[in-house]
Image (tube, rainbow, N blue to C red; front, side):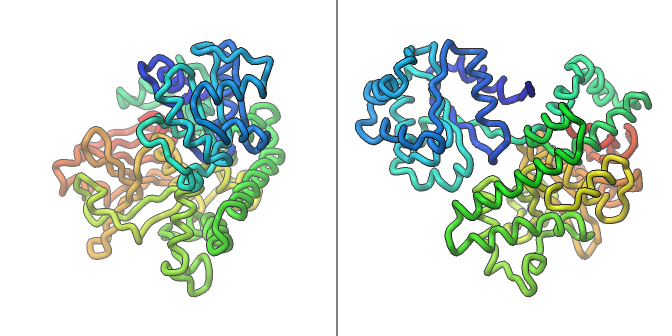
Length: 435
């Protein structure tokens, strides 16, 4: 059973006074349903689960009065074997985007505050907008992502104590012993090739067969394409799919990873395709890294909405857009050229996205300075360079020298830990999971 960090969030939610309904958001197939079901097994005497896609007739429970007593009575008639006792029963409404009245009902569950209610679904950013009365102020949110590298290590049998020992090298900025470092790089390359979608990770743990993982990745990608066809407006369907399927080429086949509409379609322009990017963003199918025109805090003040990089929300989907041989090259460390740098940049962006950071990048055509990724942490700007080898980071060095309010920057490399006098902290690629 894959251990997920989201479970700890749910445990804290249980103990919250006057708790609201919990909305578990996130892209499809990231483990939302599985995690809630395991959580219910461990923390409640019974689970009442309604999947509105699987059980559309259950929408009748929410078709009349939306008083808690009326809804509970409807559930008891529907599930006569369930007692539905406050504090002992978890009510789980899955694929809630299919039943807008159930979305509206969340306000009344929260006001009543007798029953613990968790809801989940895919494309909630698209479908919640159709709710007759959205329960603003009556829900808490948990954003679930695909499995991150630390969760992957748990699945591979690496204990918390071993990870804490690894983090000790990060805190002390001491070189990681080669035996540990080389094994961690092997794990990290495996993780990049597999991605973080739970089904793919579990298949790797069970079989170590990349052919089977490849089939899962491609099936997941087809599912995302189905969602575009099913949920996007008629005007957006084809455009959104074209934008989505262009991501691998945008990120891995070019030196400049800026999203370019001409890569979607010959002569493509923002006027035609920008709304499709917006749709994919709301649907949790992409996340963006925006260009900033300055490196000062607050970066969002200097961000350009029209100049960005677009990433898949999990590496599993990116892998499915490329030939099987890419996974082999990643695992065997035989990548070179733009693909190698592009893959590592995507992996770093993926890790930061799963930590909840808004992402930015910097490029100055006049000075030729550029920073691969920038985040804000503890009230300061943190510039990050990603190197496929361990080459110099001249732009990073220059940025640190010219901006006294930026105390340090990271250089992530296919190498070991190092610290320089100019504020650059060099870290192995896998350490992104622990900063």
